[in-house]
Amino acid sequence: MAVSAPLRLPLRWSAQRWKLCSSALTPHTRQPARSHRLSPTDDELYQRTTVTRLERDSPDIMFVDSYSTHGFVINGDKVIGPCAVIPRSILQWNVGCHTEISLESLALFHMLVPRIEILVLGTGDRVERLDPNILKFMRQKGVAVEVQDTPNACATFNFLISERRVVAAGLIPPIHVKREFE
Image 1 (cartoon, one colour):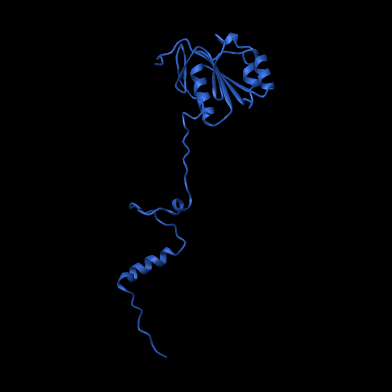
Image 2: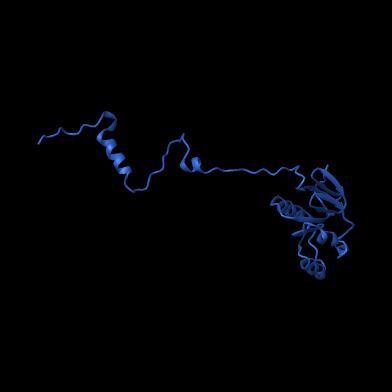
């Protein structure tokens, strides 16, 4: 039987490196690299991230840009006085204050097709209580009603509309505002 010569590793595979490489095959946890990586990781190679940008001038979305004691700016359009914001439309709303909100003034919101899921009512400077019978009637019609002060109602409306919910708003301008729209 022939005796073989001792295994000589090439210079690039020294015994020290071989030991490091063979230990990498064992099920130990890998230490994080502290250097800057230039190649993508496995997650970046096989999983794609997508970004969806909401277009502010989309005909499907109505954002309340600002409000003042005189009215509102909705998608760049100035609306004087109280308004009803429904999908794809802005209407003058014949309500001067929260006490004038009635079944008749809310009839528009429960007769729309497609049906409104949530109606956000902005009652001016403060949150005002509405007649419980009105809220009960709207619930029976399948419309949830959220009553808030006008600044919070505008923010809530914008949030819900950005989630692509079927939402409408009845907004009464507040009496006191720190800054007016231009």
